[in-house]
Length: 243
Image (cartoon, rainbow, N blue to C red; front, side, top):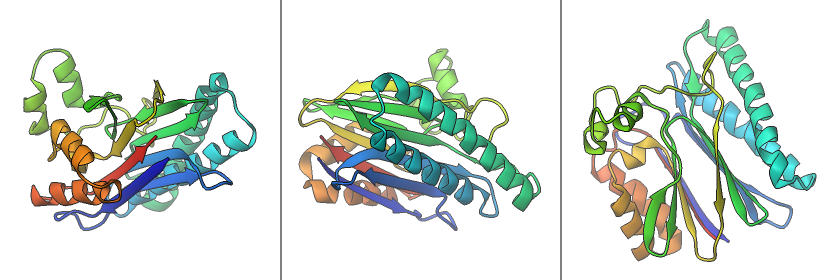
């Protein structure tokens, strides 16, 4: 398995509130892919995403060391996400006087020839297979609900003034539990994890083109640079994994 990753502050933000990690097993093989996009001022979002990524990373390692079954992985992820949510809320209350802070989170765990995905918020996970791109996750956002209800189109959602309103995230008192997806892994599959700083400026077909045309070690950088060429309006984080 090969992978590449890059996180960039972009061109408009004062700090990078994204966090990510690729968890390796004792043999150096990747077993977990984690990406988070923090929300909140005064470093609150940055800390929220850091807490989420660190906690989930340790949980992924524990699952592998205990030879966790596929049937147990969702339960264990849910339990750890509850813990993370409480930690973020406690951290916010102690350090920022209850200032709103939170983070999105998407995590993929490789287990028994499947990628088990837990997803909260509006990071995205894409699958590229047979020269086609498919978005696995569904955004937890106000505009995603408008699109689902047929009120606006997907194209209109990209520039909607309320496109950054998240309906589910860690750090929320309610609405913080994940959706789960299981993606059977086939040879030559490519998974792309990204924050909204990428997909708001780079379309799905453009992501596909870069993955198909660029050397694997250059893909994350090429995607980030393309988003910056389009304005770099947000932090940009990309993880690309070849199975």
